[in-house]
Length: 305
Image (cartoon, rainbow, N blue to C red; front, side):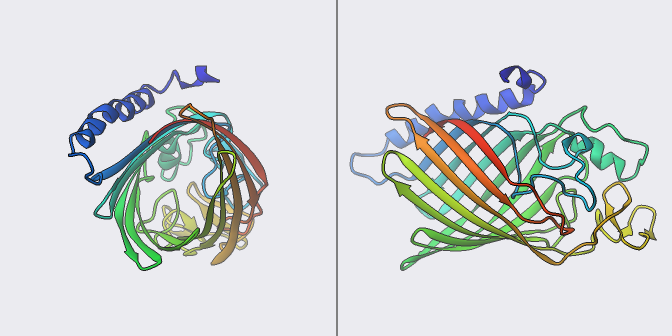
């Protein structure tokens, strides 16, 4: 499926930029006197995944029958896509990172459809996701407190950019995080919160295991999701809900719901900077209480640490 990356020159440039920065940053670390603790830890990765699923939403973001990716709906990609990123963790506790991914529909067309209801084609001008995040980790005895922000940007988009807060606490192999959207966007309503309880374990035979229990707390009304067509300034008919491009019959918004269980197992190939992974998703429910399907995702990663 590598031929599928040809329409994405920005993605190729982003991958080259990530990899191109590594020698320069490593040289800075190498200039430290012998025995001096490193000022930072740098890691980077380029991944090929069999599909791109965000927060366990495998089937639909909307309130009716599953529409699928062809209708600018979940998952972000049904097809194999490339992803890439880098992380800097400083000895002082600060951290900074970037994550990018191909998407096989257009947030530009979907955003334009909010005010232009004649748009029905969403697979041209496909988007590329760019997440930029940073924050601070504070150790307190056996615990670690984390606070930060994530900005979501997209090549080819409208109404998709948003900012999200992230706070959490870790203890041993466990951590608990909450991530809250700070403005209305195609990703959700301001105040939507994504809760995760995480468990990570290093296993024998070069294996790593991660488990995540996800839960959603939703604001039921916003600019793009709710029970009112905010562009036409009219209430939706009974048993209908606003989904970006208008009111559709189906389930109504919910306030809280089980999101998913995600189980990940990765294998570090000996003597090579390569990781093979498999992810199992036990689907929960979306913001309208629509059940999500279970899914298995495979990946191969090239990493630098």
